[in-house]
Structures are given as C-alpha cells and as structure tokens.
Amino acid sequence: MKKILLVEDDSHVSAFINKGLSESGYEVTLAMDGKMGRDLALKGDYDLIILDIMLPSINGLELCKEIRTKVLDTPILFLTALGSTENVVLGLDSGADDYLAKPFKFMELQARVRTLLRRSRFKNATEEPAAEHIYRFADLEIDDESKTVLRDGMDISLTSTEYRLLLMLVKNQRRVLSRMDILEEVWGIGFDMGTNVVDVYVNYLRKKMEKYGGSRLIQTVIGMGYVLKEGE
Figure 1 (cartoon, rainbow, N blue to C red):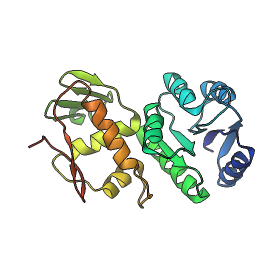
Figure 2 (spheres, rainbow, N blue to C red):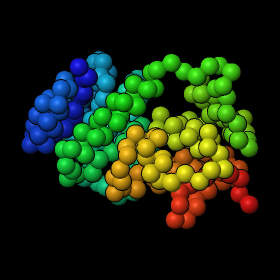
Figure 3 (cartoon, one colour):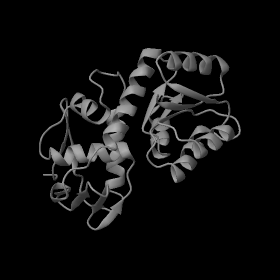
C-alpha cells in the first residue's frame, strides 16, 4: 500500500481528500499545520507528499524547501488557491514536482497522484547501461547515471521534473515536441490538463540553463511546441 502524507489545514478539504484516497487504496497520514507536516515528512517514509501552500506555522513553500534538503526523491504535489504563473513558479522553485489549483475535482487529483507515483517507480528502476548514459548537445552535457547536468562546464541544479524534461529534449534534439508529447513523456498524462504547466517548466528550465550566459537552446515553435536546437 502506497503511503501519502497530506499536509492541509482546511478540515473540509483534508477530510474530502483523505476519504477519497483511502477508498482508492492509499494509506494517508494527515498533518494540520506546517510544523507537524515537517516532523512527519522528515521522520516518515512516504511515497508522495501533498502540500497546501497556505499553512499555519510554516507555509507550504518554506516547508517544501526544508523537506527537499533532507528528502530528495519523494514526489511533492502542491495544492494551491494561488494559480498564477508567478505563484506556480515559486512552488516549482521550492522543489515541488507538480501543482493542482483549487478548487479541483477529485478525479484530477487521483490522476496527478497516479502519475507522480508511477514516475517515482520508473525512476527507481534499473538505469541504462553505462555506455549509453552520456548525452551531449552544443555545450550541454547530461550524465543520466549520476543525474547531473553541465553547461559549458558549469553545474546546473535541476528538480526531478526539470531533469526529465531536459533529458527528453536532448534525446529528441532538433525534433519539435508538442505540449502533449511532453505531458505524456514527462508527466505520464495522456490528456490536456487545461493548464500551462509545460510552458512554466520550459521557462524555468531556460532560466537555469542561461544563468551563466550562453545562447538559448530550447526554442519555441509557435503553434507547435518546443525543440532543442541552437539559435539561428
């Protein structure tokens, strides 16, 4: 049985989520504030953490950052009533893997939970043979064994989702990938979520890759998607 930590201070929302996930076969542990959530997250062994952003004692953004200093691989899903791009980027920057804006339908939450758990399972599977784990493009180098990324010799620190997105682009360099292609490969979602999560992640990945200078490698193809190629 998969173990989920739910950190949500709204009793109605937490009861709704707890009931639905428990009936779906998950073992749910509930924390009603940020401090309790931190203590449970750092002491427990959870397969997924669901965090509200607006929490008493420690807000979700700060809590996520603190969790990430100790718990590197557990997927984190943000629940937020603050659905603007700026707030989404703040959440991703703090180390979250995905977000879901309130109000939401339980079936959408279920889909996100299944995707994050499936992705985590694949991540822990056997890696590719050592001879095939280095990918290069222009001044970019990805070591898929150590999960490290270098650009012009400078280390780029990425979240697990950003890493998967970049690896997909490098493996398909010079090929235009639609947003649906990316959703299916990176998020494991085969339907249009009606959100701009792909664009948010692309923009955030660009920011990290261009932090130390260098040309833009992830190009936008208007009306089609994204492609990894050097600027013309």
